[in-house]
Every structure is written in structure tokens, then in C-alpha cells.
Amino acid sequence: MLTFLHGFLGVVEDWEEITRRLSCPYRCLSLPGHRGRSLDLQAFEEEIGSGVTLVGYSMGGRLAMHYALKYPKRVNKLILLSANPGEEGAARLASDEKWACLLEKEGMERFLDAWYAQPLFKGFQVDRTQRRHDPLMLAQVIRTFSPARLPNLWPKLKDFACPLAFLFGENDIKYRLIGKKLQEQFPVTWIPNSGHAIHIENPKQCAKHLMEAL
Image (tube, rainbow, N blue to C red; front, side, top):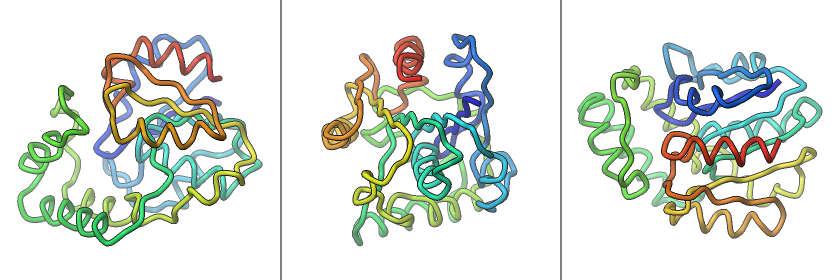
């Protein structure tokens, strides 16, 4: 089963422009801490199940990688969209805590203003009405699932039992560098005219290359 995992702040509707171009069965799952879902990772993993091809964007891709390593016999293939295998260091941890505190102290609207002002999302237009998550829950999502909080998977890339493909946006400087490192071991494709959120910014090209990777 083709299974889509959105990113931080995301909703299952983020995949609509991708899934309407598909002719195969699929499903879209909400990440822990989103849309009223708890942070219970075990329940989330049970919902993913087995016999799956996981398509994960950003945080969703990171959780997909951890799932594939934890349950290698359950995953047929991994397709990662702008996903980071891991990031270490005090600076990233401090940044995570800053964002979590902003959610707790200022609420959702102020957080969204600051979050989407980051260079990573330059030119990205998002429907904020779909991103009315619980700010206190999202603060815990950051503290639990950010790249610096989860185990670093860069040293474990050789341990994946399933095929893996990586897609990134041509204007996404940070993930272009990640793609350059990953291409030593896996197929890597850049999506034109897009930044970090390739499935939203250029869904036509993203869907085309995603289907080629299946």
C-alpha cells in the first residue's frame, strides 16, 4: 500500500494534488501530534502496518526512515521528499527549543508568521486555515521528533533493507546539499521551480518523478 506521511504542520490534504494523479491505491496518514492525534509513536507505527511503500515529506520522511530501520520486513520502498536523515549539535537543539517556546507563549498565528518567514519557505504560499493545530501539542512534536532529537541516521544509511529514493526542490539550498550526499548511495532527483515543499509547490513534476520512483 502506498502510504503518504505529511510534514510538520501538515495535513493529509497536502497530498491532494499528488494523489489525484495516481492510478494505484493509496492512503494518507496524519503524523503524531497533528489533527488531534496523540504523540503515541507505537499507535502510529501500528497504523502504518506492513507491505507498505512509504512516501514521506520532511518530518514525515524522517519518521518513515526510522520506521523502515525498525521494521525492515514491513517496508517495500522509501521515497523521501526533502527529508533530513539527522542533525546533531547544541545549536539545532537551541533552535528547536526556541520554536517550541514560541508556540507555547505566542500561539499559532505568531508562530506561523515566523515559521514561514524562514528562507526554507521563501515564496511558499500556504492555506493557513488548514493548519489550526494545537500549539501546545506542536511544541511537544518539535521536542520529540526534530532532526536533533531523533537518532542520527546518516551512519545507518547502509542498513536500509529496502530501495530508497530522494526528491528535493531545486531552490532548496539546504536539501540540495543533503541530496548531494545521498546520491552516493541512492537515486536522487531534483524538482524544478520549487523549494522545500515540492509536493505543494510543483505537484505535477513531483508526482511525475514520484511515480517513476515507484
